[in-house]
Amino acid sequence: VREIYFKDNLFTLDKNWVRDFCEGLRQRGVKLSWSCGTGVKYVTPELLAVMKKAGCHTINYGFESGSQKILDEMDKNVTVEQSLKAAEMTKKAGIHIFGFFMLGFPNETREQMEETINFAVKIAPYQVMFALVTPFPGTRLWYSLGLDTAAHDEKGGAWKNYNWYHRITSLSPVKPEELFEIKKKALWAVRNRGYWTRYVAGATLMMLIRQSWRILWTFMIYMSPKYRWVRKDVSQGAL
Image 1 (cartoon, rainbow, N blue to C red):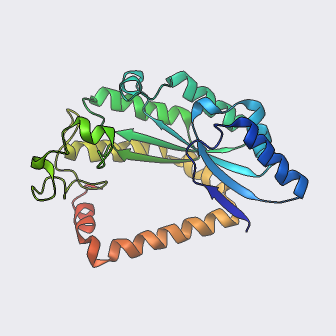
Image 2 (image 1 turned 120 degrees about the horizontal axis):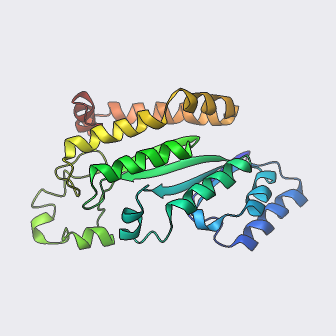
Image 3 (image 1 turned 135 degrees about the horizontal axis):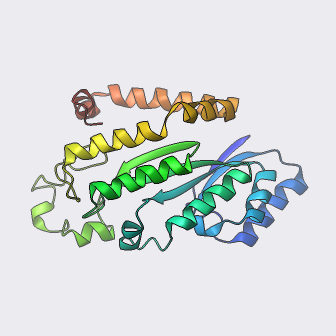
């Protein structure tokens, strides 16, 4: 094993544990390349330096939004400034950032989405993903929107066609078809020439191999008859 991704959104919540883990790798002479996820409130310059020395190359941050109003409404309990500071500390430690952002929160305006795009551009993450807010079954958002009622169950058909890629409605004032256009605009804004230059220059052979496999795996799924509706959305410019 030479590469590990710790699928933990709060990997650094217990800073003492992380320090012990990194020190354990060092004492055992383990040369490991790894990445993790955490919150912007749970990193410090000292901790990031320790993680870097132990082989951490990338941290996933769920920044979500660049609008403080949206962050407050979703009970994120962080500020835009905290996110910017965490991003700065992470880069200074020599660790890449994989930034996750979301668009289409309930009542989110186009102007607030623009704040998120500008926020992402300012952070300039090594990798980036923009997702559309999706009220998955059982989540607080799902219940708050009344999607647990009979009118929205699978028999009603409304929920069946609402997923990560396909929208039958919008939670914000922005129309569903416009949301996809804003998402594409966001990706183009961040994934500029500088983005791809940083990505290729900072990539290891293992990272490039892994990314190539992801592209092949995505293509195989895309061509599967089971996901014919995805190809239809792509051909119509929805994705």
